[in-house]
Amino acid sequence: MRQLRQIELDRLQLLTEHNVEFTLIEPTATGLTKSIMDATGPVRTYLKTQGVHDFNLQAQGQEHKLLVQAKLLGAFSESHSTVSLYRPITKKGDPRIWFTGLKRYVEANDILGIIHFEGTLYVINVAQLDLRQLIQGELHNPIKELVSQINRDANAIANELLFRLRGIAAMGPVAALLQADTAVGRTLETLLDIPINSRRAPDYKGIELKSFRATKGAKKTNNRKTLFAQVPDWQFSKFKSSAQILDAFGYMRNGKFRLNCTVSTLGCNSQGLQLKLNGSLGRLVENSARAEIGDFATWAIDSLHQTLLSKHNETFWIAADSIHENGQEYLHYKNAAHTRKPITSQFDILLEQGLITLDHLISRHDDGKVKEHGPLFKIHPRALSLLFPPSLSYDLLV
Image (cartoon, rainbow, N blue to C red; front, side):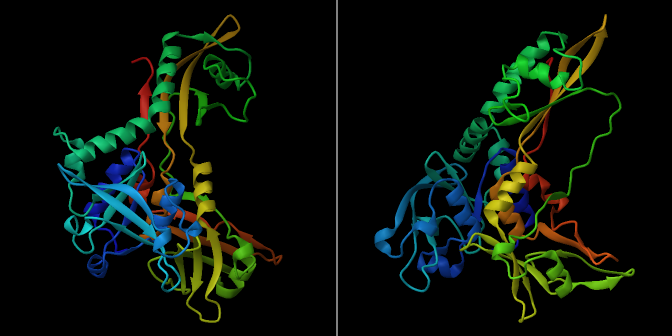
């Protein structure tokens, strides 16, 4: 897929802000002429995770084609369509996708957003449609309706929790259940009818709860640029350790043999290293331009998604004022912040666009031991809003 223009990134950011999960596809001139498009890795992953279709389980040939209901959304119109998902007999059966009526909806190399909702695949022309005006404007339109429905469903549990927290705040100061640092969390769990010790951490229908005593003058932390660290899946990698990667590509600097570099999908770095998405296998591969090495490290995309979600779970952070009277602590839960989980389908797109990169931080110490502080998957600051919906802050007394 071509590099996204800034106006397209802005439009995609708006979808992310409204909790819309999507994937992207680019119809080429040849594809429009032949009525065929490659179902790229991100498209296949999205369809699989959404429970629409798994190309890996599909046999080749027209008789195994799957047809799914679809709609092509315009500014103030929608066209019924059917999406064909199949693997041809020719070549290796590379997955294909096509929407009926698409030729009347797009021009070559437009960027299309594909959104799955309630059994239908919706197509939005990100290159042509002013999504900000359509979604935030006063006029009713099919795109605004779709985004509103998705956002409402995504926020259903969060809104339920917020309603209950406001009810607790309205109670005023409540007696802490014990004298300990954990009292602020244990007391809130009880007020929310969460069984004590039912989980390692308090949890409300999939939303993690982190409660704390409010402190004045606390500094706000900056958004993290490092998403997570994850070593390759050595079982499926040519190299079997960070030491082998260091030996192959390391260099001496400041008296230490090391490899400190950034690797991207956009091209080779100075060490000749590049990331490649292998959609057919559902893997991210690190490649060396040196022919004798080639692909040498592999990560399963599903595993990267799981790590991303585990590191950045959807969380409510609840602050309570602590009041002490006659040896008893009272807690008044007053404020909450809601940080929402990342949209994993965007992770693959941002990798492909070079907005998520990998950093090697490997070095060999004087004792001969190799230390690996990564590999770190990092995101460009301007792309954070494309991966994470914005955090929300609430005054529980309002």
